[in-house]
Image (cartoon, rainbow, N blue to C red; front, side, top):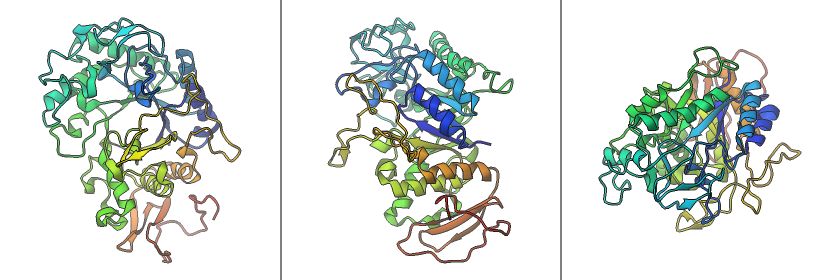
Length: 450
């Protein structure tokens, strides 16, 4: 009966375990997407950026979020209160080609990016795609060429040869260790840069979920990051037979609608979902913003609404959680000191709130249930917390009783279980609507009081 995943971006394992017990479990959250748990490069310039975790140097389970014991404890404690764990799996590549040589890694393992030598796994130069890449730089140069998107380096990251049985085996071993520890599935990073056939071979090697918490024969839930906004030869459809796929058009379009850009209106969303050219409902993993596009990385561009636009963000997330399309993911961020120069944030690299030695700070919970020390905790905002519960209650009910004012006031129901009204116009809304709800007196779950 739980229908939403929250991305606790860069949270420590100990803090996630506590959050499952004190907040996520009791409030009906279905799962947590965690940051990559693998051993990653540690960078000084820039200082400990968030994206260092997307540069693996090994598959040991120690990262800036904690060690293997803390990870195991978190998985156990979250599962015990009904909250699934979904691992951000970085399997397309290792660290950047310019990553140097030494023990500047989160578990202290030695590696050499220049020699493509990662002995803790081990991977050697024979396990990378350089011989297949046909570009002059060795990097992806043209997204119109599907071969180089798969066989060349994404922004200089050393590209694994996933057609090799040996490499597939090492990747599957890494994922299976996590499954055996009790995770429920994976967010698979950079899937556009991997051949669907290679992913299929890896997924086919994955174990069933741990029967301590899941029914016998349960398979891992997989959602694949494929940035497809149209206009490229690689489409999300190539991956939908393998698992769910991220629908990046969703947040980009929804942000533009709530910002009222280019004449967009909420009233145009009566046929929201597949009617807007999105992928089939059963394939989609949807979100208003993610860790990349809230800071101008990845895809979606300037229309994305994040916690920086808190009122619009609350409305857009509420719309997503009220609407039946897709499996929903809620972002939970940390704030950073933005420095926008000519439209680009010079500080988009900044990592999570941390101590002087670079270690990640714990997440303190204030008396009013908000978070401190730079942790935003959108998932704790009253409006979002209550709409997660709303989605659980209306799950399986049809989109019904639509009303709009031909502008930015809309309303719709979910069968006879729930009804929601949005006013994104600059004037008051006073209208009598057919809600489809049984007669009675109801409370307004967004304000939590009326």
